[in-house]
Image (cartoon, rainbow, N blue to C red):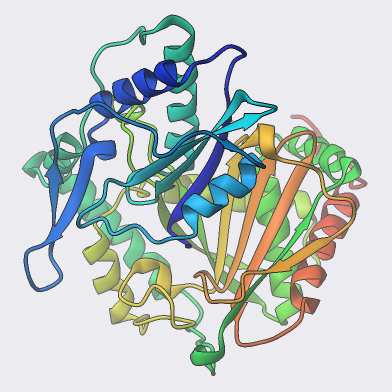
Length: 399
């Protein structure tokens, strides 16, 4: 399921079932999101029901199996978050010894940032039995601040910024056959590409996310024959340290309008996009209804490909998410271009996820009514060509 996040957490040698369950109980006690379900009070209005802490028991006996398959099996069934808590666990053994905890979390409770935090806290609890810091904030506290009068100035500033963005955005293009949309993906990464991207970032004093985003925008525009694209960039919205340890889905997408001049040196292009991205990050925490209202004023309504209808994500074709070291221990560098299919529409029409491990690995998902992997492979190969070429550009002169 697209909203499920399966994970595998390796256990320290000698870990017992009791220690695992005590650590999971402490996590559920600490984070309200892990003991929250949602009820519809009518008209599609969900209400959070925060349950009191209770002991956590791992379902079923430990399984002697491949931990990735066990985690995927936990995520194969949708959560009914009106009656279920938004996470499932299973223990996995190797030769009879406990080795892994398979976990699946619903995206309503956590995002990639929170998953990493949750794993660190789990391992700390197994190691020392307690966490060094005190209480963590709650989703209710964050919501109260977002709806407060004090937040009004920030909200008005965000509305003004998004009016400007949608006012200059290229027209929304919808898939002509949403009933036939299917999901495919390609994964690619090499040491040469990683070294080149790192060199470009250092030479132009840019971040690796900005380098990869810039290459993606150029490659996608080039393949699709466009002189301008609008890309939705994920932001984790944790710049305020007060909310950094809040377990929830804080990420949102921020739209960027990116003009493409194929003759512009890559370093100059990436530099402009880098700072435009920072300007939009300032408004990355926004009221969803505000964004939908502003988008509709400029012809952005419904959905591009039949998924995410009624949400901000339904308005975009191109998505970019730099996930950093998310699931680094489970990330393998592909041998050449790997491809696969989900067999169904799982969301974003064209979605690039970038992860860091032994190399930078890019996974490009396409959900469209087209078939084949030509677009996926073409864009991934073009990203590499753009970055390798940019690494040969003369470094900018220092003032």
